Length: 391
Ligand code: NZQ
Ligand code: ZN
Image 1 (cartoon, rainbow, N blue to C red):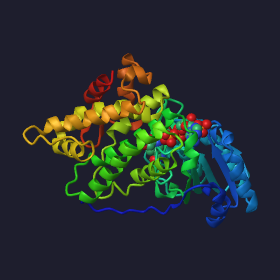
Image 2 (cartoon, protein in one colour; image 1 turned 60 degrees about the vertical axis):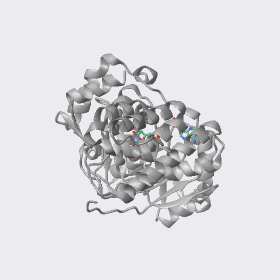
Image 3 (cartoon, rainbow, N blue to C red; image 1 turned 120 degrees about the horizontal axis):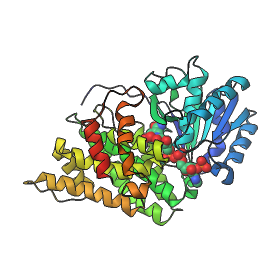
Image 4 (cartoon, rainbow, N blue to C red; image 1 turned 90 degrees about the vertical axis):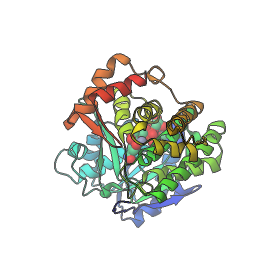
């Protein structure tokens, strides 16, 4: 196990009707003027926005609103949010929605306290200061409710890039599984896929003797394997929704990733797909992960064989562990298809003829120098082959 620091200061408030505590929580963390930030309208239709406003009113907390965050959030609305917060003297950003709304909120919160262009953070500058952030999560997926990360797409060039810093970890996150019951099945499945990707990206490590985090990841993957189909079959299954929601947080606040190197190649390869085709991030990952895993498994066959046996119930073939490794990848691929995820470029809406462009942006775009690295280093040629495997 490698040395690490783990800082996860978010207060999680979990369960039914907990959104009614929003006002009380904003007050507890010193908020006096709030920006309520939300997406394309699901929080209006569900009545969540009205309940949150009532909760803020009850505590005498002033607020302004900015809706319209799109999935795969864009830089344009972030600039608008920064201007609005400065004009209105906002000191707290409250995100109502999923990863896209939370990430846009984080970018605004960091941008308000920064004199330069907020995009600097998405080109590698660490975020040191931000307005306080709270979240009310409506989809279990990205894990942004407990993470120090934000992913934004810059409209000029359609670069989808991430920024990080403990300053953008939410002060509180309200997790009410009931709020996720209105999700369309496809979005639920995309969320499940993203959560499992966050686990796999950590499982694929070059560190050794990481038993505790290996076992935590396996437990969470087993939970997702069990609960995913239950939620797809019955969207109103509160207990399954609850387990998925907490697994989604645990998968990405890094409690499972400490003390070990991590991969993130699948995420980097996928981000070009959701930037170019505006597909759901989880759907892109469903097509990306099996291709990446089949391309890299020989780098550490036993790691893939281990997850195949412990999570996917494969029999260990001691003479040919690569067979077991491949069986595990195939079992995961079939699981993703069974919950309704796309299996290739066509189903995702991606085009084979765009591969050179995707590879170019992936390997050279916005400051990169010809490769991406994680579990293995992948150059232009590797990435081209991986995208072709998805066709
Ligand atoms: O915009 P509205 O109307 O709210 O609709 C949303 C959106 O269309 C809908 N939705 C959300 N909750 C709903 C609902 N519809 C009905 N009922 C509900 N309860 O679902 C759609 C997708 O929402 P989005 O926020 O985009 O989903 P998700 O949470 O998967 O976030 C995806 C974004 O997060 C980034 C992804 O790249 C992508 O941009 N990620 C962020 C990470 C982080 N900050 O740590 C890590 C992840 O790996 C990921 O990259
Ligand atoms: Zn993800």
